[in-house]
Length: 232
Image (cartoon, rainbow, N blue to C red; front, top):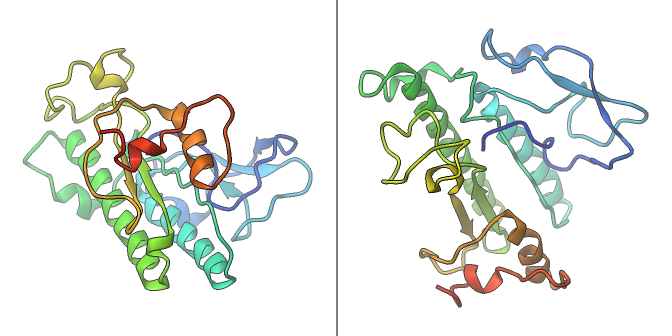
């Protein structure tokens, strides 16, 4: 989670359909006055999507609920149709602007500086939403057939002065505290719970997923032995 990335699950992002910024937020996606106001439309035919109107690209922390809700709704249509699916969900939170639902900020108010309370509240909100997503997978009976990957895109920012696990640096630095990111892989019945110490990076994802799917990824080495615990 972190910065503006690609759209909600299931959308067609072929390079020939370039986005253009056109309009303001729909009212239901406006949690705060300082929220991003960028939405997207398309040159030419619009790609298929799960709801009408312009497609949201950048969203605030208060919209994380909506991001996950829409993703779950799309997954449910695929599951009901018996179709395999790939969902790539990238909420803006935790990230500036630090707009967070009040009940989440209150969890940390008084214990840490105000901006840190907002930032930690964003993380707690993501945690709750990931829990909702996992609960749906269980309810649909596909939990053991679904690989869930949760990861971040850089080291810490607002909260590093509170806790940084002894690491030097933060986002925008070359130190471990700037480049180390969380990566959790969950696949009940296939992956054994545990930690992996082997060094990995984003470039390992494609060959790893390709091998899991039964395909070859050329000369790039797969990280499958790492996630299976064959390499500690």
